Image 1 (cartoon, rainbow, N blue to C red):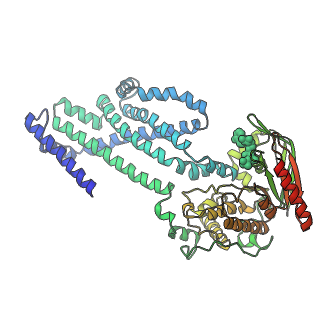
Image 2 (image 1 turned 90 degrees about the horizontal axis):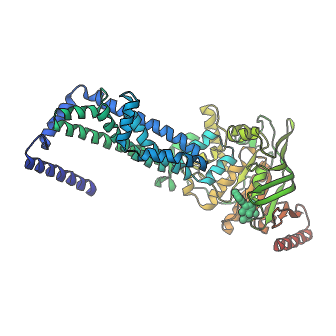
Image 3 (image 1 turned 180 degrees about the vertical axis):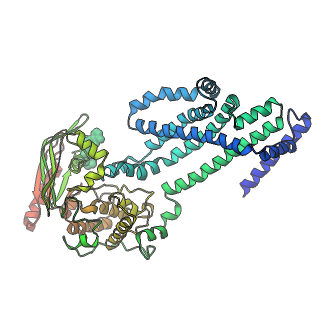
Length: 575
Ligand SMILES: Nc1ncnc2c1ncn2[C@@H]1O[C@H](COP(=O)(O)OP(=O)(O)OP(=O)(O)O)[C@@H](O)[C@H]1O
């Protein structure tokens, strides 16, 4: 209120100054008084050609700005992961940015028809700003979220819509607003010089020719007003888009999301949050998950059958530049087993997990994920050195891979949830889109009901409203959806307090018992490995690494277990 009062006072002072100046000059042709300009403004507004004139100028402006936005998005998307292309484009963009607008207009006058000049100028003036804004926006997108999208084989359009756009929007919008203001001024200047038939700039030029100073100032007012209105409209768009891609205050609390409630068909989504207690669904493998939640745990996918997958690594080689991590590396993960990988920091545990998950491609040897389908025998998904077919499948048609067994789920050390999406939408992201609206609604209903059985957060909550432990639960659930047949867990209990670790361990056991995948877990904690795994592997602290300990700890007596624990401890001390 105070700000707007101050603003009115400022505007009043400006008009008073103008009035006093015009009285002092006392020549209308040099500085007309406000009433004279107001009169000229009324005449312009009453003229039937005013609407079409303004519309034509706005159309040129918007067209040029929009083409520039499209060009900026294309160029920046290509340049974002390619530093050489970004460097290649830089001189051209710096040149365009540095050339005086009037030079651009004069050249455009030589090259283009009159109507095209303002559009071209608007495009060229906006392009460097928009390109830089989109590039900075895309660079600011969280890499971890992008990795998550890729690992869960979210389709390219899905990743663009759910991760890239919300992640980049704040930076892009601010650049788009600045570019819009600059290009409007450039359009008016281009119209003054090119004089297309219907144009604000042409009208100003004509008024100036006849020394109608009040009309020139009146048209200037109209131009300023239009720029202010468009700025305001962009501000509204800004707020709407930011509300969509950011986490507004009210979503961080425990307010019920009524729209979501309707979407999932839950009667009381805003009820008290369920207590964070260990999960007790009392299920066992094959206890009817497929019947109760057929869309989450399909029993008759394209290949059919409850999955029980294993992974075999044969003579695998893999290096990062200057770090030969694996050479002639062999490992076999049994279907349905739970394997813990221990070793010093830097030994290559996470890299091994990403190779198992298919996120990294081995440079040599073979990695075979296979599962026994109930319906059609063995199904294999072999990967080794990269091939074009595999590249196309992973990046262009990731859903195709997702529909196939064996599916691999991944649990990250940190939750990697989209902050601008609810828990439900975070989980839906990794599930295939349903064909019809009713199928989609049914999928959401089943997901919400499944979360309820697991005492997970209310589906409408946003990650910002959840505790670290709750977020990690969602992270775990996400990996187990769609009947994943192998789950890779990268230090899933790190950064949690003792009580939460206990709850998360219970959840992992529960999900494993209920869904039945093979688990491969990287951990630094011997206790965790012993609590969750039935096999412990220890990697040497050397490059290339090798397995220096491989212990089966399932169904062994407490004496044997004691011995194994001592051996593990001594190997971990030696590494
Ligand atoms: N993207 C990368 N580019 C280059 N080197 C990498 C990359 N990722 C990992 N490395 C290197 O590979 C080695 C193994 O890394 P990795 O993360 O697999 O080890 P880790 O055993 O999981 O370690 P930690 O327990 O600390 O997570 C390290 O020396 C690391 O510096």
